[in-house]
Image 1 (cartoon, helix red, strand yellow):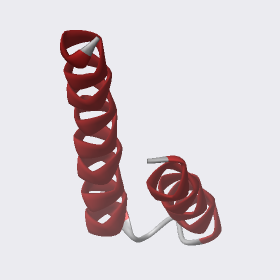
Image 2 (tube, rainbow, N blue to C red):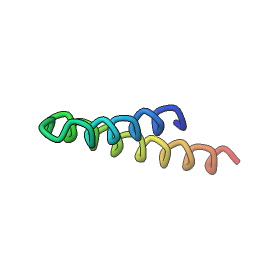
Image 3 (cartoon, rainbow, N blue to C red):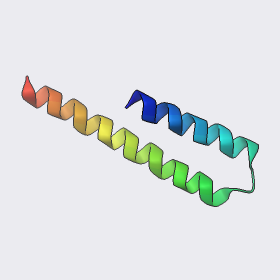
Image 4 (tube, one colour):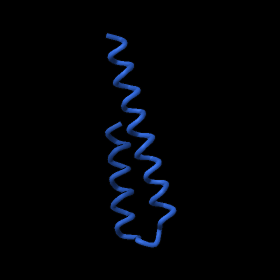
Length: 50
């Protein structure tokens, strides 16, 4: 999850360098949303396991 988050941060940094890449930025937002929901599901799974 941490590695995916780092990739998302890199995507945002890439967007700052490429202002015209609006579609790429939207894709980056989707990755961030997917990453955060995956982390939440992982935390819930660990809590349930305990």
